Length: 316
Image (cartoon, rainbow, N blue to C red; front, side):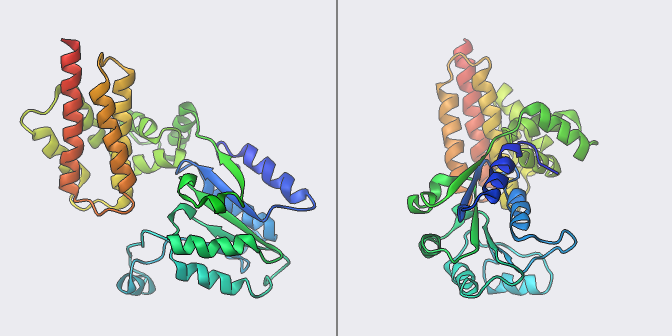
């Protein structure tokens, strides 16, 4: 099944496969949650001619974040939940490169998926560059990138780019009605706004049940929070130990809520724009910082409350 917005990417990929000299490195670029990883897996399976009845193919290799440390590695070996590293490390790239010294196992082609490639450590990126400069015959790289600008320019220049567009709100709404039919409409509306065209982000938002968080954010923007009670409620709704995905969802939601305010009735949007810029900064730090959930909730709530005051002053 072709995912939403993937038709052009499939056309370009299959046209290249049918040609005489297919490019050896592909950069799959687009917003997080638009299905780039799913495309990479399906495209790799087509490339190596994988049997649809076999789940794991020996000539498809995936590099992604591994366990954070030896303790988390033991948890994975025991089948327990484990914490991921924040980056793809050079040891993983070196291990992949060892495989490239041998021929593909089942045919003439091999696929290397790196997801997300913009989380490569600097040393890992430099090591990967050597493989992209001198790729073994029959080896093809698919680099999934949510923020391609974070990649080394020398890596980007060696890749053919496949762009994955965002999806219209109406299409996301239709998808949510199929995959999450029991979600209330306020949660669905907030999910679509926060996702900004990403079906995966919208579905994750619904699954994280951030409807109460969205309601509290809107109340702070509409009424302010002079006694800090709404900010306290916001912290409780976010949770004491949210994972990185939940924190990212909260930040995306706050940004989209503020963006609606800029597009709406705020006569003087300067403070709102400043608050939005600060949320963008926090979202950029989120992959590498360990945020205290309570302090983060207070900071987000204060940015929203200040934006609400700015709107009140502008309205007189």
